[in-house]
Every structure is written in C-alpha cells, then in structure tokens.
Amino acid sequence: MKVLITGSSGYLGSLMTEYLLNKNISVVGLDVKLRKDYKSDHFRFYDCSVVERDRLEGIFARENPTHVLHFACTCNKIRDRKMEYMIDVGGAVNILDQCTQTLSVSQLILSSSAAAYGGHRDNKEWLSESDPLRPGKYRYGLNKKTVEEIFFSKPPRPGLHISSMRFPTILGPDYSKPRSVVSILMRCPYLPYFSMKNRLQFLHSEDLTSLMGLILSTGEIDGVYNFAPDNYSLVSDIVPDKKIIYAPLYLIKSILWVSWHLRLANLQPEGIRDAAYPILLDPQKLLSKYHYVFRYTSNEAFKETRRNNNLPEDIWF
Image 1 (cartoon, rainbow, N blue to C red):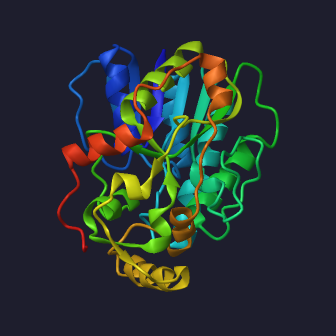
Image 2 (image 1 turned 30 degrees about the vertical axis):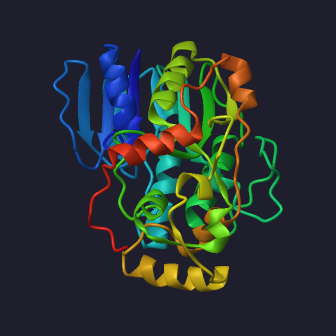
C-alpha cells in the first residue's frame, strides 16, 4: 500500500501521515509547505499545489500510489473567492483526473464537511447522507457540495473506488487552530445567547485515524458517508462559564463580517448559521459497514482538547 495525501502538512493530513508511518505504510505527501520533516524511509514529500496539473501528473506517474486521501482545501483561510474556488474545486478535479488516469490507484477518499448540509432552523435532529445539502452562501460548505457533485456525476473507471467522508469538527491533543470556532468557544468570555443551546459534534483525532485506517485496509468503499460520533455536545454544558450576549443573529453576523475582513477570525460570515443551528451527522451508514465503536464521545473530544489547550495566544478575544 502506498498512500498519497494532499494537504499532508495540514491538521488532517498530519494526523493520517503519522498514523500510517507508525504502521510502516508508505506515504507520499503533497502540500505547499513542509511543516514537519518525518525522518522515515517510508515518507516522500513534494512541494506541490493541487492546482499544478502538470506537476501532479508527473508525481502520480512517478509514485504510482494505490490510495489517495484528498485533504487539501483552503478551509476559510483565503479571502479571494476566485482563488478559493480554484483550489477547493479546481484542485479536487485535478486530483480526480489523476486518480482516473493512474491505474495503480484503487481508492480515492475525499474529505468533505458537515458544513455542506448547512445550518438551518428546520434541520432534522439527525441528518443522513440522503438529506439535501443546503450550505447557502457559506463558501466552504458550498465548495464541498460542488466537489461531491463532480466526484459522483459519473461512474468511476473500473477498479477505482471513490468515497466522500463528511466530517464534523475534528479535535484532539494536537489541535491548534487559532481564530476558529473552537478557539472562540474556549477563549472568548462572551457568547451569543442563541449559540448556548446549540448542539455540536466533535470527532476525536484517534477515532479519525483508527476508522480511516480500517477504511483504507478494506479498500472497497464507495459513495458518501457521515464520519462522526453518534452523540453530540451541548454548548452550555461544555462551556458553562461563559457570559451571554443578547444580540440578534444579524448583528453577530455583521461583527463577524468585520472580523473576517480584518483577519481577526477564520469563520466566514455566512458560516455563523452553522454555529446557531445544529448540524448533527447520523453515522449509522458507516458504522453498520465497519461495526466501529467510537473511543471518545463528542464531550470527551472537546474536554481533552481544552485540557491540552494548544491554541496559540494570538487570538483577539
């Protein structure tokens, strides 16, 4: 097995790279920056963006990976809509094309998101894979929806299995994303009243790597899956010490718009609805296939992350 991971220097990519290398599985890392140099004969890194079609073609031809994990995305980091689309959607198409052309690739797994469902007042308590995707104008969720539509618009070539994993927020002892929703929950002394009764899902990094390792080992899985624990966290339970701001959603959205454009927060203004209304992923389709039992609940994932508290101090709250 040789696994090619796009976005290998990011949070998800790093988690899976370390997990696979610890099992002596060969990993080919693709990213625009090497953040950790793994001293392993099983690891090879390429400084390459997913938008560089010609370079991707050469790398795939040279490495002949058997499995591909497509984790590369902008994830709210870019304020340029055109560039964001080019990376998130155009880059995903490039990876799909290379996996289709490279006959050694038997499995392609896309990292998708709960944000594709969208936060709505009328969301069902538990959302299944057959429920409609309604990301609204939230570009991160909208791009994930678009990529899924492209990936499953036609049958893959024979021998290639394509699947999309819709993740909630992934936490763990190594989580360190400043200016994120999680950092707001942990660091900000004030929260809007409408968020305190919201229900959130957190996936522990150990459950991510263990179940993903199981998926890679079987190889033959197709379609869309909710990849989340079968429980959730109530905001008022996990951060009961917060002071409440009684402000309407539109006002908080306006504040977030200013924070976003001043690069004080990494949450697009349209994403505030995901923090106001629950998006709870029903994982039964995936769990029934692999009979996996999660080691950590959503609450436990959040508490361990808060206990380790690796978030940088350069947050504006």
